[in-house]
Length: 99
Image 1: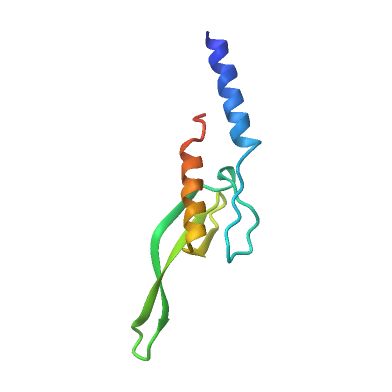
Image 2: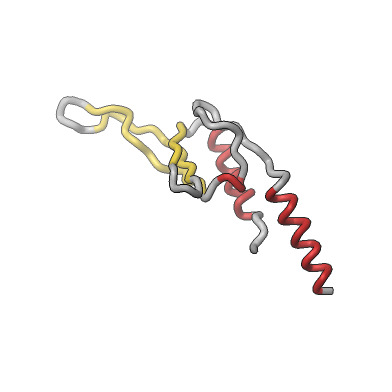
């Protein structure tokens, strides 16, 4: 039965690594991203839109951070489609086979 568990794990890992679901985020220069290409996705953060003469922010906008394995971080505007893709990427990361 141990060999069966090993084979099932290899099939699951192969299907996750080789045949991933790709998501194309909007308003970015990145190509399609899959869960095997990233480390994590952070949503619910805000940045200032602009500053007045005193230095106070004039408004805030929500952004999505995508963190890659090499440490690079991509900031994307939190459009409805980008939030949908970020949630799908998070779900794919949770379903990643444990090595």
